[in-house]
Image 1 (tube, rainbow, N blue to C red):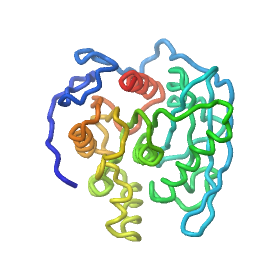
Image 2 (cartoon, rainbow, N blue to C red):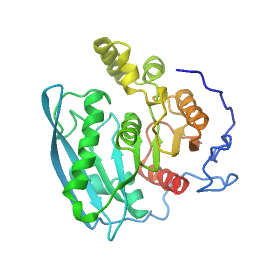
Image 3 (cartoon, helix red, strand yellow):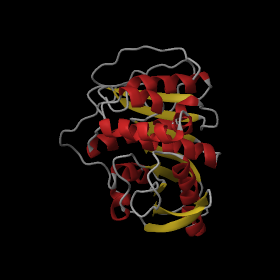
Image 4 (tube, rainbow, N blue to C red):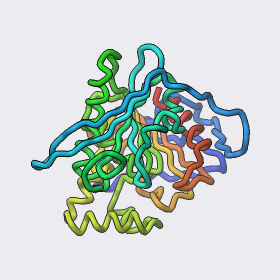
Amino acid sequence: MASQQKIFFFMALTFTLPQISSCVSKAGPAMDQAMKISDSPGPESLKVKAQKVTSGLASYSLQGKAYKVAWFMCQVKGPAETVFLAHDEAAGFESDHFCEMPESQAFLAAGFHVAGFNRPGFGSSTGERDLVGKRSQQSGLVAAKEALHANSSLSTSFIGAYGFGTGAASAAFFTKQYGQLKWLITGGGIYDFEQVGRNSSDPDLIALIKKSADSEGEVAYETRSIGYDVNGLPPRVAIFQGKDDTVALSDQAHTFRDGLAANQCKVTYQDIAGINHKISPQQLRQIIDVMISSVR
């Protein structure tokens, strides 16, 4: 990767939007407005019951082999655009609970339909897990198109995508492939698989990255690392990163942010003190609410 100019800043126990050149989105919280994230009991976030829930299996082929990919969709009442969700490596989405997840609830409450999919080897999606490899990337595109086709009466379209962990890479590749999306939101993302494979505190993730590199060679990193080439990503990108995250280290997230800013993207970046790679549902809902406001 070409080296990017580094931008250093200090963050308080609450987090604010750091100034990243002229590329920072003007939407969302003011620059000097601290956003507090709390896990203590308090007023519950707005809960939304989806007006309609659909799911299914879509077929696709890759290198002469046939696969199935599971997709899910939750609809709000009335016309709306759709957000596409991608899951982390820990687990796929559960069909029965997809609409109740904090991620889905945040977007539904903001007036979006929500669609998502399971990568190969997760849930009902067939094929071996490939750590956001080519099958994962193709299956996401197939699932998104099938979800819209199955709900064609909505006359909806995708406006943005969201992903956490390895799902951040999955969502980012989806925005490149689908095209014409307005924004991308990522959290705790793995943007440079080679760096994370060297420095992550998660032995299982390191083993998966090593397994991919052993079978595919150096191209394994290039195939999966969205930070290597930010061209084709949406014009607005919002990133949140726990300062205590030792699974997906902040250095590679900072490099991704700097690459986006250098490419004239409008970037909102949140470096959150006191947050690691495991975020409680209540905290995650609060964070995503802020991220949504930053891309609108």
